[in-house]
Image 1 (cartoon, rainbow, N blue to C red):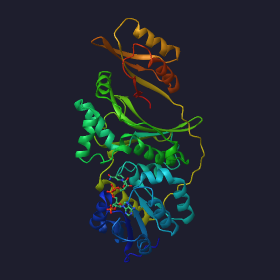
Image 2 (cartoon, rainbow, N blue to C red):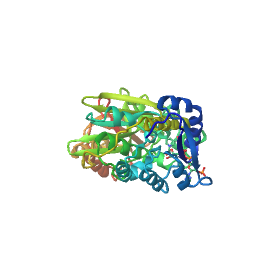
Image 3 (cartoon, rainbow, N blue to C red):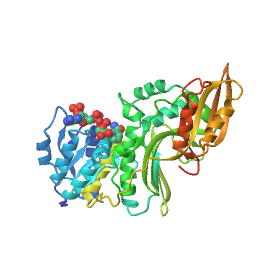
Image 4 (spheres, rainbow, N blue to C red):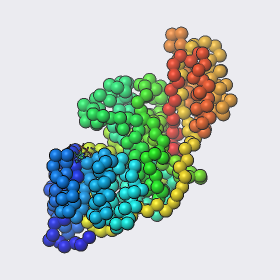
Length: 411
Ligand SMILES: NC(=O)c1ccc[n+]([C@@H]2O[C@H](COP(=O)([O-])OP(=O)(O)OC[C@H]3O[C@@H](n4cnc5c(N)ncnc54)[C@H](OP(=O)(O)O)[C@@H]3O)[C@@H](O)[C@H]2O)c1
């Protein structure tokens, strides 16, 4: 882009909701700082909402497009049209990138137009820039973190107050931490989209949302959290992208962390992401993972980067297969009849399937008992095979509940 100091840069803004409105305000407030940093004063060329503006006209008048509409259609068409017209784009849209990344990055490369998306993962935490630029040629072994603030708020509150999931979710909605429709947050899809983006960048590999295995937190019960507390564990919804011998694995799942784990202290709506690699060691960044102003601030950072010049173009260097098999340790909660031989039978099924038990807590419950067990790490398929044998046994009173456990020294 040219850098005539006196000519303002015209920005086309798609969407003026939570983030878009905050971005428009920030552009005015921080305009002088943007000019000082880049030599160009930013100006809004036009705004598109459902009731205002026409995309073609806005594109015509703009040098740069900021996409804060959300959704995948017609957003995808607008972003592609902008890139094809040679306009750089800054976006906060994780689902768009996770579902259509291959197409968008290919068009950006062909057109030689920058596509920036810092705000799409963990809002204001500069994890995209760090992985893409600072660690751009470093070998990354693993990226993992808490990338959804809504679920971390819910799990933190459930642990602090012993309140059930539904009650805490309603409170999160009242406080504005959860959307009116929180489905994508609580079922893990939002975190999965963010992990697809981080995996793509960390491993220079095409990764789409459909290659991420994900589970949410909808079926977590307060007593799971209470029992786990006794065992020194705290519950988080974790995203993990890792390089394996035979490919890469990208997963999102609720899991218990031991107290010494770097992500165990992350509370409330905060996000945190850790990057590990042989030359990187271990780097963790944490901060607010959502919010109109915070997200808009990350988008404005992208605008400054675009105006400042060249950006790293994402081009996959590898074509590693996605591996779905995993090795995990599990917490198992069983409600069983309180009679002799039950624990021995459960232990026998686990043993025959190659699952070894690390700790057991047993509690009486009238005629029934609760068995809370934590296993040593092993192949997930062995654990699930044992679970399939245990669930129908005549002394089992309720559906068994299983949650992964991450040991403190590794993920
Ligand atoms: N909110 C956060 O904390 C946060 C954090 C990180 C990333 N993000 C991402 O930022 C983006 C925007 O989120 P938001 O919370 O600001 O959303 P929002 O409040 O729902 O605002 C969306 C805006 O886009 C406009 N829009 C939607 N569909 C449109 C269409 N088909 N044609 C024209 N305009 C359309 C809406 O127009 P109307 O005003 O006419 O309805 C509204 O102005 C999303 O991709 C989201 O995932 C948000």
